[in-house]
Image 1: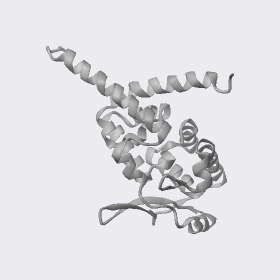
Image 2: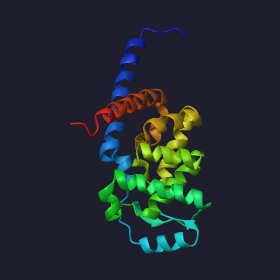
Image 3: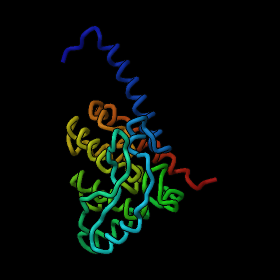
Image 4: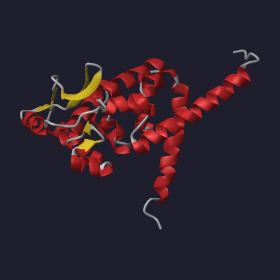
Length: 221
């Protein structure tokens, strides 16, 4: 394909966008924020129904909080659309997803809230199941993603689904899952990432490499 005289400028702009995207994704991974959109996904009200959530889990369904707009303000409410707990093996994997979250976000797990986002055990399990279903992947794959980075568990499940769908539309479903598997924090970037999938692909590879490099020295004096 031919290249016009503006190719250099476009390459420079693309490089700048890549660096900005990588910085945004990295920041999201460490501080759980990717600008105003992600701030909205965190919501503005805390968890007030943990007991009700746990009771429904005892009935064999998984339920958690989702964001809902009310007079222009987002607030957390219990979803009316519960998910079935499929079997003991699936429930055990949901428990492992909670373990991964509570290890990575120990303070939030103890409090049951991350900033203003409800993150009780049942909330996390519900978001894990929603993520699995939204991505149309196995429970094993969904658990693998959370083990890499549990950040998607502090984001509204509808927001995660919309971001994934935008990524799949911008490339393919398989490429979206590949990128998310390397860097789950990319889901904090919102639907706009679907317009920057080449940059997201490169950035996720760089971030995965940096994580693996850091892990080499983890725990060493």
